[in-house]
Image (cartoon, rainbow, N blue to C red; front, side, top):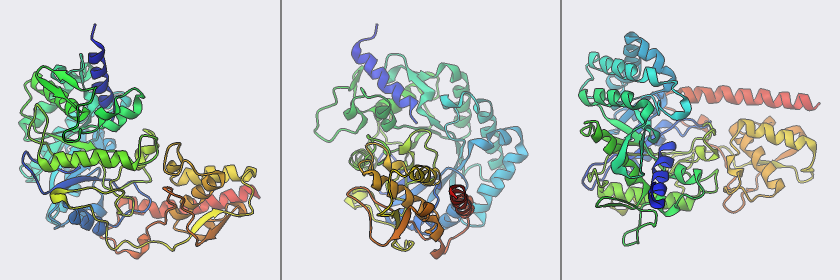
Amino acid sequence: MASCAALRALAVVLWVAAAYPVVFRARPVDGLAMNWGTRAHHLLPGDITVRLLHDNGFDKVKLFEADPLALRALGHSGIQVMVGLPNELLANVAGSVNAAEQWVLQNVSTYVSKYGVDIRAVAVGNEPFLKSYKGQFEQATLPAVQNVQAALVKAGLGKQVRVTVPLNADVYESGDGKPSSGDFRADIQGLMVNLVRFLLDNNGILAINIYPFLSMDADPNFPKDYAFFPSPGAPPSQASVQDGNVLYTNVFDANYDTLIAALEKHGLGAIPVVVGEIGWPTDGDQNANVASAQKFNQGLFDRIVAGKGTPRRPQMPDVYVFALLDEDAKSVDPGNFERHWGVFNYDGSPKYNLRLAGGRPVVPAKGVRYLSKQWCVLRPDANPTDPAVGSAVQYACQYADCTSLSPGSSCGSLDVRGNISYAFNQYFQAANQMKNACGFNNLSVITTTDPSQGACRFHIQIDTGKHELTGKSAAGRATAAWTAVMAMGFLALVMTAW
């Protein structure tokens, strides 16, 4: 039977595996990189976002889909791009070489030749072997990778653009909790070997997503100090894992090296491995807060800038930090924290102090324009116990982001009136401050006095209509349609009350 220490080490690896950008080499570096997601109701304009990247020294970026606004803004920017092909397209691309060629033409070749986008990689799918998908994408992933690779070669981009598959850390495991015992998950071992072999033979790369936060958040007994990078001179965590002559003092090193051991076990150790996602959220959960995010990301950035890798890979791999900005339209199925991974707020303002390369601090986005300084709150004379209030709040939070009201979150300590006002204002801002979006059956009122309390910020949204956008994205078009739907839905709410 394994010792308690071994069992705890195994739990550490498995919790990270069950979990769910900044690219660097083995030497100290000046350039950083980020994941740029676009699941937001009010997107920070592409040109402002690209300037934000530049101003903070981020020279590589990963997109989860071929978003036109983002890609056009990245043209001639000097920023290297990894563009994603979403999971929902895997089956189509896997089943048709022509479909793969059309996708590459529309989402890679066109942006390279017409807009001057420096696309360096295509991420085929995103965590397609995740256990919770129950095999949904397993049959399509490798054929899709093969067809995309063939399409890139046909387009004359085979040497410039590499293919990868971002994978969740649950694709590998360790029987005794030690990284050296790492191997691929038994049910997909053959698939993983074939996939990595193809990538290796075709100059591809492997991307792995590692989330110490999810490990800690899922297990109340998880050793919290092991989730963070140890400070210089600090004693190692009591949860540190002794693996032969190597002492693993943090979960990132142990997790990454578990994958490396699995690759080496199957003769695939030569494949370049990048970290596709890693980060720490700031809200929506008791473990998601500014202090913890600052501690984790500062430790990560320090490692990246110093070029310090892991015991099995002393050279720091390319690391894509997740994420650049908060995304208030993301699914909260994983948890309410899912909308709060940004190093920057939705408007490009820094959430906390970070030292980047050369010790320089992060700087905010420039040129951001906002809606009017007004908020929607519960009327002073309204009764918060009115039965109509409950349905109004439920409606507001159905269409707007109320995750900051979660227990232990930044707005979790508001009183009843504060909770109601926060929900009303989130809806009001999401609907572009349309006057009829602050009605709620005469329960609310517009105020010019900021109702923010302590750490709980009542937001004012970006005025996307005042920015010159570099191109309309699918998300941007959806925002306009979504706002109209909200307005119609609100009218329906009023009619129902009547």
